[in-house]
Amino acid sequence: MALKDITLGQYFPGTTILHRLDPRAKLLLTVLYIVALFLAKNALGYALLAAALVAAILISKVGFKAVFRGMKPVFFIVIFTAILNLLYTAGAGEPLLSFWIFRIYWEGVRSAIFMVLRIMLLISCTFLLTYTTSPILLTDALENLMGPLKKIKVPVHELAMMMSIALRFIPTLIEETDKIMSAQKARGASFDSGNLIQRARALVPLLVPLFISAFRRADELAVAMECRCYHGGEGRTRMRQLKYAGADYTALVIGFTLCGGVAALNLLGVF
Image 1 (cartoon, rainbow, N blue to C red):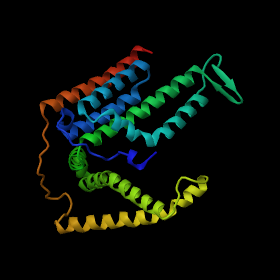
Image 2: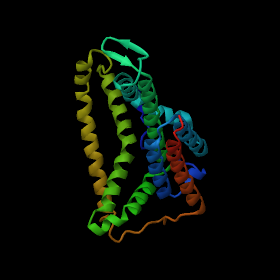
Image 3: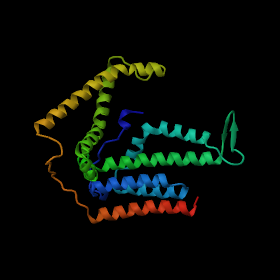
């Protein structure tokens, strides 16, 4: 796995319908999709959610390649989770396979498949949100949706700003890490040889300059914000005012319909 495969936080500019949707609507749609994922209990429900995600990717024109490349870093977690569900899910009747202390039942196979689908669809939908929404719009949307919390003295603007900055600097730090690794390799360092402990020790010369670079970037950002008289959300105006349009309402209706459809399939007991 190369560091360039980590695409979380990247934004792909575009003019598609998905790019033009209000960022608040996209956040709500993502939440609805995640809720529907956890409601899904059968194959038809997951097929419906997968079809919806495929349609969204096609509309966004981001491309399946970018989504799959971003999922490479979590493949190990997905496989490990599938194995745990396969081996430790008990079932009724005779096991499909039995070896040593493990027994594999049909229920375990079903649970493993559904868990893999759930994780992959969940990660893909969150990637699609960041791919089609700029960090600034994402910050404004988060602040707007969390606006009611201001009444109980929650620093909504500061929280939204911190989340957006953290998301924004993921690609920057990954690029910085890649540069430091290339520089270390040019000096004879090896990050791929040896056992697990030796590889972990080889990362120490990488972490120190990375932390120094991250702190330097944070200090430069703080100075730049102070020079522009930034003082939090109080009295702050925005160049772009967020307004819902007809497409946003249509997308939200589709999101609620999808969520309700998955719940209805559970009630009907469809496989």
